[in-house]
Amino acid sequence: MSSKQTTSIIIGAGQTGRGFIAPLLKEDEHQIIFIDKDKELIQTLSNKEQYKVRYFGDKLLPCTVKDYYAFLPTEDFAITAIAKADYIFTAVGEEQIKNIIPLIRKSLEVRKSMKIDSPLILVTCENGVNPKKALIEADLNKKMIITEGIVFCTTLSKNKNNLDLYSEDFDYIPYDVEASGKHFNLSGFKPISKFKNLIERKIFTYNCYSACISYIGDYIGYSNYAEAANDKDINKLLHLLSKPVNQSIATHYKVPIKEQELFSEQAISKFKNKEIKDTIARNTRDVHRKLLPNERLIKPLSLMKQYKQSTNIIELIIAAALHFGSMNNQWTESIDGILKNTCKIDSVKEREKIIQKYHWFQKNLPVEVMINEENK
Ligand SMILES: NC(=O)c1ccc[n+]([C@@H]2O[C@H](COP(=O)([O-])OP(=O)(O)OC[C@H]3O[C@@H](n4cnc5c(N)ncnc54)[C@H](O)[C@@H]3O)[C@@H](O)[C@H]2O)c1
Ligand SMILES: O=P(O)(O)OC[C@@H](O)[C@@H](O)[C@H](O)[C@H](O)CO
Image (cartoon, rainbow, N blue to C red; front, side, top):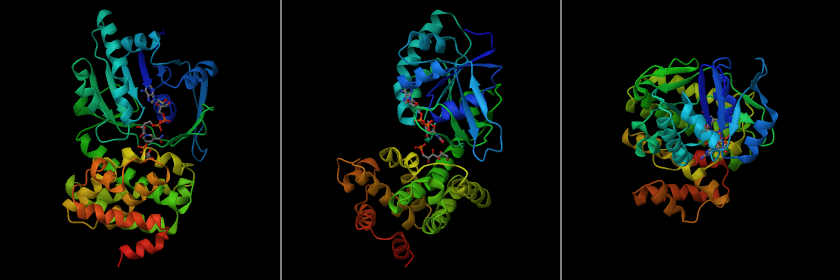
């Protein structure tokens, strides 16, 4: 296909795949092949032959990504390309990982028939505490190296019809070196030991705050994410939320409190940065996923309980997420049913506490009043 040294497949040619992972892979070394289930996107990528990634604040020169191929997962070219590849990076969303298994299985069979002995390396680049789980359960780790990366970088596309994107200037993806069993010889990828701790801290700090900003921001009426993050009441909430988040995370993951506080401050200052034109809509997406027990809201709640921290504010954010789901017709069950069956909160008393706050949102109570209630 090409004379470049390394063939790298990016499954998921959306914001992160196209705008963050592709520019990280050095153009002169990597033959990039995008695989995406969106037919229109694949057609546009193939027709336009190149696109630009600009950087928030416009202080850096844009990067042009070109000389790539783009296929649908159903095309034979996709199977052959994966069969011959060195690396696969996924950026499809954690819940979509299970759907790429048949494609990878077929490709591994073809790889075997081609007698390619070198190991195929897959790095998930998804938000979530265990994105590789479905791949391991499908036993794919016996035939390839599977590891996880963390995406700290925000990358946004304007709309579906425009390939160009805006991204933060982030030059690496931390990856789990223990799971991969080796250091990759890849610039842009940084080996991390005790990776599970870092990915969990990231989801329970950064993404927990992002849920606070976006679900409360949506309730107040914001559509611009940074504007919501700078709102006076949301700031107060972030301040109140960060205390139990930092205490419980520092204790649970055995990191110095100062280190966790710095991590937390970095998250808040990123989200308040008005140069990053993020939207409330992108951050509120998939509310059901965000309410799962191992996710950004329920897991911090259980850590706070475990380490005897105040749970008032996180309960309020959970209530805001439930309210968002109701307003957007996301539930077929009662709120109690969601708390019991999706969030897996067994205690009736605890569910009642959250439902009471959910009613505050249903009654349109001002956020300031809710904060005062919580601080009584
Ligand atoms: N965009 C960001 O700023 C950002 C930041 C941190 C983490 N992430 C994470 O990166 C991942 C991707 O997010 P995104 O923002 O790029 O989403 P996105 O919706 O922009 O892109 C996802 C792409 O994956 C494709 N896709 C979905 N299922 C597929 C499948 N089964 N086979 C092939 N293609 C499939 C979609 O068609 C889409 O083009 C998510 O896990 C997200 O949480 C994104
Ligand atoms: O991508 P999601 O839907 O899991 O979460 C939305 C945001 O919280 C997320 O994309 C953050 O902006 C990103 O993880 C940077 O911290």
